[in-house]
Image (cartoon, rainbow, N blue to C red; front, side, top):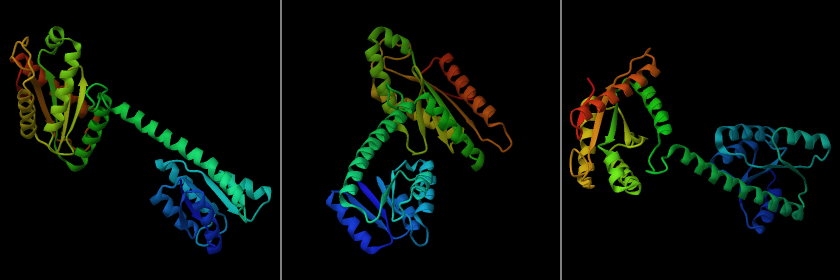
Length: 310
């Protein structure tokens, strides 16, 4: 474990430091409550040993500040108070302000070792829980088949980028892409081949993006959507055309297509430059509808092409 010790007495620091290191843990030392709060933010410890009486900021105020930080997603971390005050009111107050346990000074090495063993179990469980939470968050925003962003994450990113466009007065473009005659591909090659095809298309699309701000997601079925911040209609059309060329260069055989012997895409492109005082929800809906209409036109005109919204 990484343990943060907040203690102003140098002699107590040395004694507790030796106990902690002997138990095989890493220690970081703060000389007052303010240092403890700062080190908590920068070091992300697994446990805090907090002296109650310290200069600059005492342990009670430091604990309150740390508990406020944990509300901001820095994560819950156990805090054990160290104090020569042993009456029940002091102990209860320490727990009330956010402490999790209380050790009476002078600290007994055997008791401290037992507390560290218990806290290590808690730290291990916390790390496992954090890993599980990160995995769940990833699952919530990633399409399980193609491993790119899913529709839910698109909705989130789309609104965020629209708001950014409002603030910066920049254009925002969307590209909606649909794999041509994908049903015929699935029907003739099988669903496993269809899944492999979707994975390959998604991977190629990700590789075509040149800027970190550009974003692609699986919109649904065989449809994909691109969000291109600070990009006008002509620029977005060029991106769509490069996507089509990239898919063509993959030469995925589609002998049953009514367009080509290889897999192709139809793309609809739309752009908007939001203005202040406009309804952002209406803008979002209209831009999507414009891209969708352009995609429909591309299909009507024979597919395997890019059409821009009027």
